[in-house]
Amino acid sequence: MTSVAGWTTASTPGAFPPLPRAVAQSFYRRMRAVAPAAVGAIERDRTGDPEQRFPDTACGRLVGSLDDAGLRALGMWTHHWCMRFYDDDTRVGRRLIRELAARPGLGWTADEVRWMLRESASAGPAAADRFTLPRAAAGQLPPADRPALGLWPDVEVPRQRRPDQSG
Image (cartoon, rainbow, N blue to C red):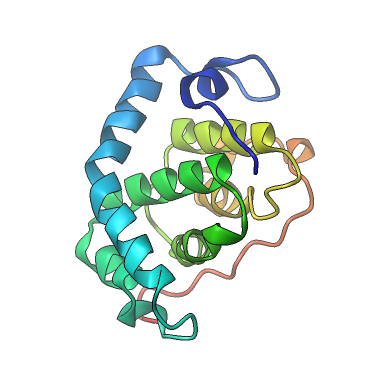
């Protein structure tokens, strides 16, 4: 199991510039707001049918109930959770990350992407899907705000669906 510390990861030197403490704390505040619903949805989906269409799952219903800011917070929380507790039990969380990565136009910020990249880089190769969401989110940033391509490992990014496709 891979473990990554939250604030330490957000503020340590490395390939990605450190985030101001207030920015990182605002991320954790937003993530705490969606965490109870996310934990409940993930737990319900763990016992459900893994072949069920995503919109019909508890996680899918949660995603359908959130606005873009809520979806970004949910994505960041799920990404954080999967990086800290990455093992075979994260199947549902990894599915949620892939679904969020496939959604265009969530309005990701450069700071959110940098935060996820730091967590991904700290998690190491044991967490195979660690760059899925940050890479997709970075692709939605204006070109001037995107992290340099040399920092990215070779990972596959889910194709983003058009907003009119449900899934």
